[in-house]
Length: 291
Image 1: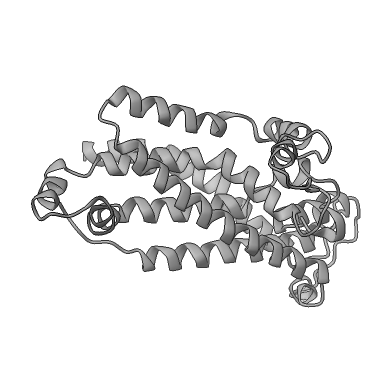
Image 2 (image 1 turned 180 degrees about the horizontal axis):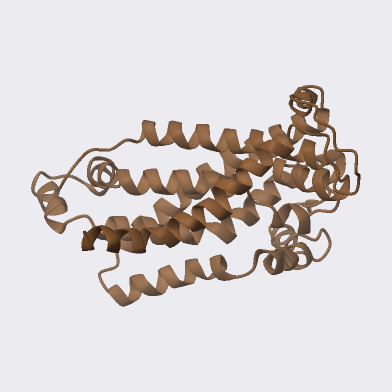
């Protein structure tokens, strides 16, 4: 009986947090999506699935969906590939202090405010005339690139910034996973004459299954919800709305156009996409192993 009381005492704050800050807002958002809701209007009529039907005719929504999927798929793939490669390279250092130093260096951008770093990139890294990237390109004889003004390049710029600001977190996670693999597993591979690539492919990758599952799901969720760089790095979603994503579209619809009902419908679509992809990823990388 005492144990049950202790368990309830420990779990109750977490359950209340989930109820108040997750379940209730989702329920409110779902309810509002069935109304033509404007907070400045007294006539908020019930329209049923009207907002969801409107999505199929909305060209801006389709463009935002396309841009979001391109951004997420490219950024997540590059993020995981670079973070895994970097974590593997860090693991080759024998000194714990050296490994900790490199983890700290790569993790530093993760703790910096995204709004502040977005401003730095927009004014120091990406400018056409004085930007660091174009200065480097000019030094090797290549022409300058309009990183934030060319609709064909804007998404690349956003992905570059996102990888820089977010890759350190996954490096730390993969490093922890690699450090957790017992040394005797690699020793057995050495006795079998396995090279570095074979050990990485046959030992490290399979035994990082749980780390992979967590990293992929968390990175997918965070990238779908990213907002700061799309609001700060580019002006008015870029030329031809080339930088418009669902998170920005939800914000514009809700707070600029005051159409809360339609914004809630878009939010529900984004929520469903995240849930489906997370579920598929968990099933795909379902791991059952022991050392």
